[in-house]
Image (cartoon, rainbow, N blue to C red; front, side, top):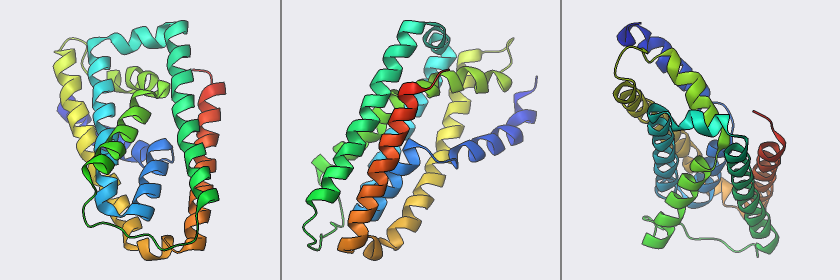
Length: 211
């Protein structure tokens, strides 16, 4: 199998998968809408670092062990569900406690806010059990078994995170442009409530889902 000849199919598959709704998109939309593009950037970077870690894990063969082990998969599934549920409940609380006051969006996020957004993205991606299963099901279609598996997987992983980073930053920029509308008190409360519901629903789905 020639890796170069399969690149168009790989790029198309990555774009389609990245554009599908999920926890990553919910986090990015919420953060860009309420805090602006600069605050969404660390979340995107955290998500993509987590994805690249899973790509390297898959290349090293450890993802197959996670997918094959019932205990490891269960633990990761529970952790992933808890992370999403906590983020969802946090959004609900923000909607409930919203006083209706205007919020100022800083031009640059504080160091604490930057690392918080980065950490949220990284944790959500690393605690996603579907990521391990996805990697061992998706990447072997484009990695020649007779070639350098780890190196090829690492390069394809870099290509994927570059594509996803561009896609997610474009999404965040588009949402951020409508930030003034999203940050109206009534709209803001509804956005927090809806994003909280989406995250909780995704957490429940992870908790009850099978492989």
